[in-house]
Image (cartoon, rainbow, N blue to C red; front, side, top):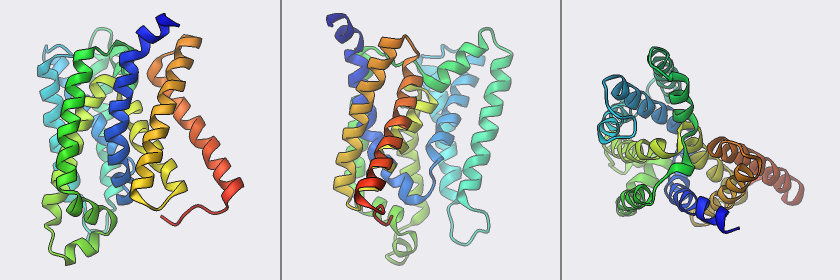
Length: 277
């Protein structure tokens, strides 16, 4: 038992940090109807680190991080500019295009590099078990700052996420606040992908938030449910990974899917129709 605790302690703390910020951001993403923006920005971040690796930087070093962050902020700008009620093209289309192009470019680059398949695997599911205490502390401090900024700016962020048209009528500069949201969101994604990989970051963002929305219409209650689910699934996934000797990131992603399916079925059986979104 002590071996399990020593092995999983810091990865579990890291998962709680990831849950804390991603569950909150996930509520915004689901309300905005841009479900795959996290997956797309995560892939943009992965492309940035891939190009940094091609340029000779350590994949886990500071240079790769800033390459990744620069690409992510560029993606944030594109998404902020593409959100408009007047356009004939849905924003989700731009998000999907960015994801597909960045994923293809990453594969093309990695195909030319030694051990490219291993790097692709790392970008997808990360290596949560290898996270160090220093990385967890830095990540927690960064996310605390971003969380504080979102608390300070909660009114424009929530207004634009929940009712875009009404926010415009109230005089909010939509593109400015959209860019600020996506920029802070991108900083989170860049840091998270380096630790957890694209798929796990997406799962922490979307699955707890979607689950919470099945059970409540209130933001506070949704956050509580999302945080509880994220923590519980992290424990279940890590223990299952240890027990069956499977990749930790992929195991947690599958566990998220399984728990969501069980809770959705239970919600349908016990309480009737879900709350209106």
